[in-house]
Length: 183
Image (cartoon, rainbow, N blue to C red; front, side):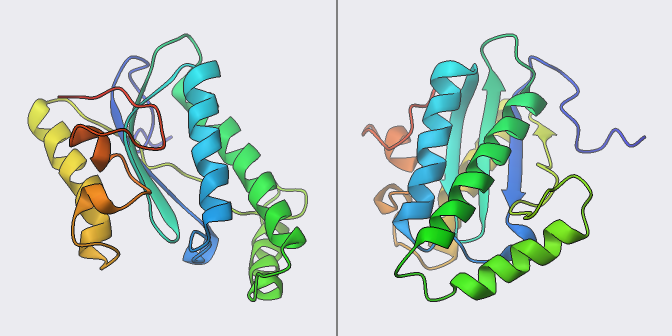
């Protein structure tokens, strides 16, 4: 069994990435992003997830996380992804303004059919690609990568002006997710 992309140290700090199946651009609507935000805050308050940095892009999420309780990170992430997938798919199904509804649901249904772990739909790709951060240099590099991602993709000119990341917290403000600053 591969040891790559595993949460090996239960007390480690990790950079993770998780993406929608087929890289579908779901997170172009605030309604879907807010489901993630609510879940991040719930997991932080109730499951022991320490969120140090985060960004929601159009089809994927980057985070720096650790844990502050006894629940393993892989369980927290599994539960968060399961909950958000159900909630986001339900929001897509119920949406009266989603012009890509049929197209997205077909992609998620097709992905769900080929994965025996799913009943009907698969929203997220299976993995989180956790990379343990062993030094301040690695942490700083990933922190900059997360916060610069929206700038690199043309969503904003300044990281702290993009609502869907933690850059505002590191600039002295208060963002949408309760985080534990690294520096």
